[in-house]
Length: 206
Ligand code: AP5
Image (cartoon, rainbow, N blue to C red; front, side, top):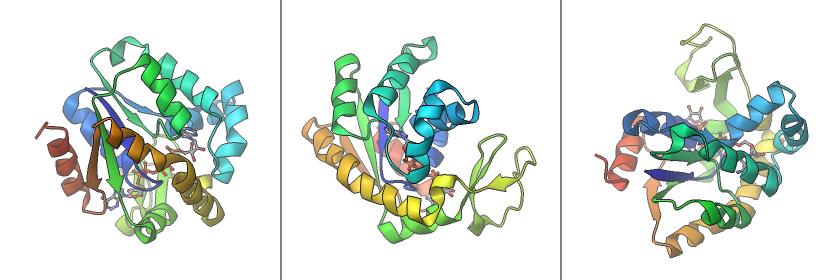
């Protein structure tokens, strides 16, 4: 199954993607993760992407389309994949449609005040990528023991910008995919396990 996860920053796309790929045995393709790794490794793509990401702007369409097209061509994607964070502009969605046919688009809906709470309290493990929230009271990564840190783009000014960018550039994709009969709205404000169950139901996989 070829799935797209849509939703604003902090909606829980990455958190839910981990659960769904384990259940469906397909790879997760997170453009945000791929770009952050490129920044850590100081590759040419990473150096180009860094300033956009830190201020909460989108990386140019041609860069992310190339990343996704190359990743989808890898053998582990032949039975499907979950796109987390792509597409997020109309030109990206139109480009994707030229080389792939998507089966379902899950749109995670979460009100803005909850998004801000989730992003301001999010902590990530720099070593293994584990994601948590200060509300859970973890003082180090429970998976590998490394320190938990805050993403640079979770700083308040950057969060404000990301939410504005989402409204202007990504929200139009809701109508785009609804028009194709692919959109499934899921309430992302529920507890984690309930959101996972609702996504599986929406996908017809429960
Ligand atoms: P990306 O990494 O994709 O960030 P994002 O879309 O802003 O999404 P987030 O990772 O912030 O949130 P999420 O929805 O995954 O939430 P999470 O599960 O972590 O992109 C980063 C940047 O890269 C972009 O700004 C852009 O610059 C660039 N980029 C990436 N893709 C691009 C593209 N296609 N085109 C151009 N540029 C691109 O959850 C958030 C928090 O909430 C966590 O603490 C989690 O523990 C908690 N939480 C989640 N669900 C629940 C729940 N149900 N109950 C309680 N807590 C919850």
